[in-house]
Amino acid sequence: MTLDLPRTAAPTEAALHAGDDPLHKARGLLPLHRNWAQDTRIPQGVRPVVARSWARAGTVAGEIAPVDASTVRERRRENGQLDRLLPLFKQSLLSLAAQAGNQLVVSDAQGYVLWVMGPSQIRRQSDGIGFVHGARWRETDVGTNGIGAAMAERAPVQIFGPEHAREEQHSWVCTSAPVIHPASGKLLGAITLAGSYRTAHPHTLSLVSSVAAMAGAALYQEHTRDMYRLEAATVLPEEDFLLVDSHGMVASSRGYTPGPRIALPAHMDPGNVWIPGLGPMRAEPVDGGWILQRSENEIQLELSSAPYPRAVIRHGQTCTEVPLGPRHWQIMQLFAAHPAGVDAATLRQLWPQGGSAVTIRAEISRLRGKLGGLIAARPYRLLVPAQHTG
Figure (tube, rainbow, N blue to C red):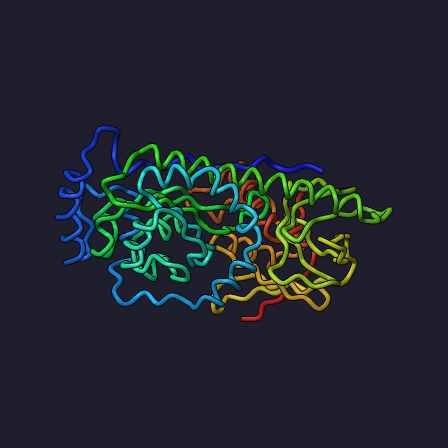
């Protein structure tokens, strides 16, 4: 069993540099915010991460309506991994947050605030802007803010004073980092330190980033233990196979050389499935994952241009749609018109200036990765007939 080590994004630029005066900084940002709010054009001088958020979210008005307490409790139960990380967040951030006049906020992948901890004075102030349990703080809900921007960027973000979209948040600084599962790449939520903009410091961004990385490492260790348990508890077949968990992470294999993770269908069912990069497989559920083996069931390939170019692969009872870009659509059209195959010289004609051998091999390799074994080489051809369906 092999697993990639978790990777963390480098911290983005802090809102302030060491020695900057927060009040002076806020006064300088206020005209930029006003200009943007009036005509939605982003002026020069706005930090890139903020400019991207302003462009994504725009100006958002309206009330922040939190869900009720019972819904918050239910969302906490549904987010068991965040709940298990809560002691780490408290131990690493809470005391320092309180000393700096900040509160600690933990939100889920939908942006709902599930836990708010810190000095009562700061919490009373955050109540006034709707920064409370059950409120949803995505960019689409409240405009540019730390939680929403960190979720959208999938990277640590510090949003200072008038960088927030809504004026009632201009006295705040929010430093957030996403919590991302290192195995699945799934966004689990975000951790945030929030307080008066006068408490802003560049070190806060490094601190929150480090704790998010620690959370990723803890999730990685937990997942590694789960993978070993999956492998030890499964009776493996004698024929070639792949043993994967529910995220598609490979716990064991024979006869295959996959990467550490394969792309499972969004809704996995037992029986015949199509796996990108592998092709037709037979899926058998096991406790905690799946055993995948080569399927010999008939495959049907359809090419359809409406409503967008795509390949439709029918395998047993499953149907997989693979969107195709313009170049890949041209190649598939050429393959369908020449069942016996085409050489590189014929493919080269698809490029205006003529494609090089390296370019053609790279493009075919990418297409083969999408279609999982349906394309052969020498000559390049489809291994199953292709039908046009419009």
